[in-house]
Image: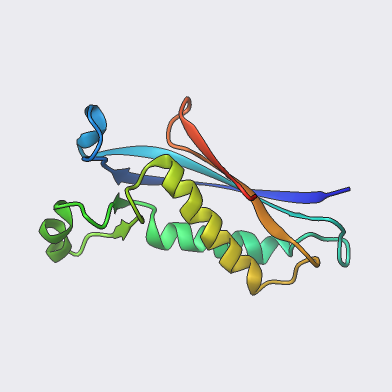
Length: 142
């Protein structure tokens, strides 16, 4: 038996994918949704992870680093152009594809889990990121 909890959060963020052909080369934005699932084989004190603090840490990170900001790849030529203007810019390893954003939030959620009260062997097992109502990517622990 496995127990799990899922936290959802939304954020507004711009990005671009200049390394891919097509319209996503242009700077554009989305209303993103993140769903992060933590699972454990058994509960500890009736929980997988202390829900309130987990939601708080995950949502705070998203709001501070991504919401109403811009995600760019480390090699994006816009970085040095926009940096002097004090914009909120988060560099996503590789490029800010929806797949890489899912992996990024899996790492952020795993780091948050480390500091919180949680069941033994609790871990982030699944992240789903939707950049539109019809486009999403998932990250699943192996």
